[in-house]
Amino acid sequence: MERDAEPAMAADWERFSHWLHCVCIVTFDLELGQAIEAIYPPHVKLTEKEKTSTCYLAFPDSNSGCHGDTQFTFRFRQSPTRLVTADVIHNVDMPVLLQRDPHYFYGYVYFRQVKDDSLKRGYFQKSLVLLSRLPFVNLFSSVAKLVAPEYFEKLEPCLEAACKDIDRWPNPIPGKTLNLPIMGLVIQVRIPSRSDKFSVCTLKQDVCENMLPAPLVLSSVHEGDMFRALQPVLPHLQLLWELVLLGEPLVVMATSPAATADTVLALVSSISPLRYSSDFRPYFTIHDSDFREITTQKQAPPSVILGVTNPFFVKTLQQWPHIVRVGDLRGPGDASKQTKIKKVNKLKSLDAKPGVYTSHKTYLAKDRAIIKRLQKGAQRKRPSEVQNAILRRYLMELTHSFIIPLERYVASLMPLQKSITPWKSPPQVGPFVPEEFFKSLEHAGPQLTSVLKGDWVGLYRHFLRSPNFDTWFRARHSEMTQKLELLQLEALLHADLKLWLEHKSEVEVVDMVIKLQDKMATAQQAGIAVRPDMFEHLQALVDTAIQGLPADLQHVLQRT
Image (cartoon, rainbow, N blue to C red):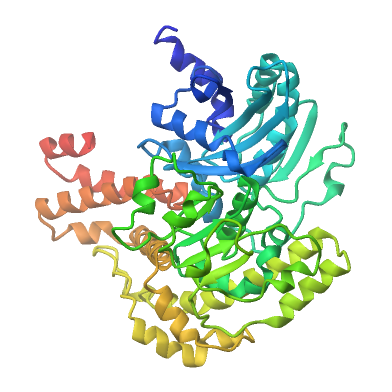
């Protein structure tokens, strides 16, 4: 293909690229092993390392015994890349949990393994993988489930048609309910917005009653069945919530990538609306390019959640402090039998009894009421949607109770508006002083919204040392700093520029013009919500100031 043709092809697939990076077909070659058979659209390029990662993650480990069709999700580090403009625009109004990730690819896999005597190996083994930077697990898993079986039967024309369908999709605009055509059907889903109030809700069917064919309505673009994923370890719900909240190294072991992926993703979302800021791998193999870095025994385990199925990891990760062994539930009462917390050194093989292996002592008392409620619901065959909603709401309210005191304290670090003047740099956000925060808990702590007893201060002390706190506080600090910048720009609108210019030297005026131009440029680049009329007024102030300067300075400043 000629070089000039590639940008043209990329432009042709612009809408597709807002949703997916590409679709990969991975097959098993007798000589090469797992290999990429096709990439679509054909102009998309993957590095050799990305191809290798995709190949090894697209198939279950040989010991998994996955026969028939299996779906799971993986995540791997992509080759170094720049945060492109489209990512910034997408991320502005998107909840932090769903922002496009510039450093990682998500892979949504549909794997088929069936006996086929016509093939040398005796088995048909192939995976269809959707690669995306978007964590839209529920949507893309649904798309893979529609496209892959058709592709395995009809091959290339089917894949091309599906990709062209996706290229017709509107952009994933936060706050919009979208109708997405795919394979003769329509998927209807709402893209969450940062301005949404956090709640457990579903998309109403009545908005699409008149559509033909009737659409496949997804209640969430990203949320899976959390109750089903965590049911095997339900008695340890709060323990796991604490470990994820504190960014502790955690390994999920199971016999299938579907089980590890679902569990890891459920754990990551258990602290919603707080963002889990460390690395997580729903399915991790010994072939991963980060394997040595993550599993090294020369230093303490990193803050990461791994999902593994290879028995090799039992020995390799034996120094890790927290391991979750997920087993299949045979009946509604099985979860209640897995209540005992075991020491990590008791885990000798992947066949070990399901449960949580850790020496972590929870800071908060166990809430037996929620576990009992969910277990009774399972025994009475309560619909999974209801069980899921009960669990998600409980965890969301628990996280809110934990975060509200932090939000309240950080809000007190914001300088008073009266301290902002038009001609001076805005005041800085105050420092976070842990002891002052702990003191505030006496009258404005989590006890106002949560009935749970325990060592809340100890939990906060541990949390303040975690990557999750660092990411959360940096985001809040940035938001408040932007707010201060915006308040200063508004103060400039009401300032008397002519009076200020009367007694200022050329150097002072030039300095003011340059700073104001920088502020306007920074505000635009950072996506700060500045009204268009404010920019016009500020530009008029700049022009007025420049007009009072000598011609040579005017020429220089007008070019910048």
